[in-house]
Image 1 (cartoon, helix red, strand yellow):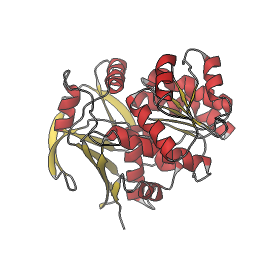
Image 2: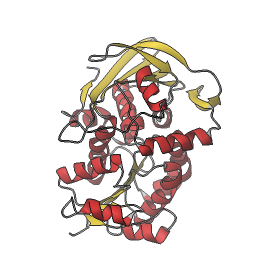
Image 3: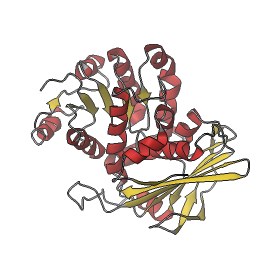
Image 4: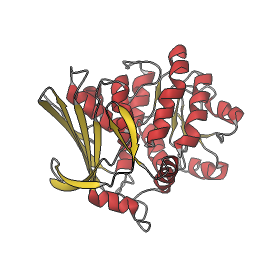
Length: 343
């Protein structure tokens, strides 16, 4: 296969990586699969006719350069992103191709903005961190809800998940983040990230159907606290997680997700509900769908295709809401994502 204009998926053997490769192939996009385990890559390639294998490791810059040679873009779905993000962004910048990742790790996303903004801006290369369910979807919903507003007093993003069966990658990323924070929790308040030891508290949140009223953990902080304030003037960004999902995630014996349909999705249902307030006025937006890992695939692949087609609003390092027309992007994901936006 000719790899010109191919998209490289690094970490293709992982749970989310497989969804992304499948989505690229469904859309007819030439695909290169990469990662550190050559044997697993070859096994997967046998199931995907026409897919090219290029093993690489993040501690070998030359191998990354070979993996990205002649490609159109790279999607990094190999956590922990605290380890893989920097080397792959740098490889993408050397190759002069867009970089996107699906990182939910707050500190890794902060590092992408802090460490690579200048180089990406100078080269005119698009770098989009957290282009996934966590970070990307919330940012798109917030941006669409705000509409013409460029500032707000506060933003609230509530995650209603009927369950959360974490993948091994999710567990590893969580352990890395926990260690980096020394067990502390994090919030975005007063226009900055703050680390604290306050005890988690619960409250109720009225989600759109089919979830309705649910108990949530307040300040269950996700990547939205990085993506949203990266381009919107909002001093308070708060995120919430359904209690049952948080308990699943914390449970050591909670199994990995199991497929229940032909697309490989689990039976997990999610609703993401966004509330923004400015000057006493409230606006809301929401999205619902099935399987947080599966929905990441159309999110990131739609982003890749828009970048390659020049349908962007920013250059350099930018979040989903800054890079794309948020409302148009969200509507393009129908029917796998049902959205309600302000009229």
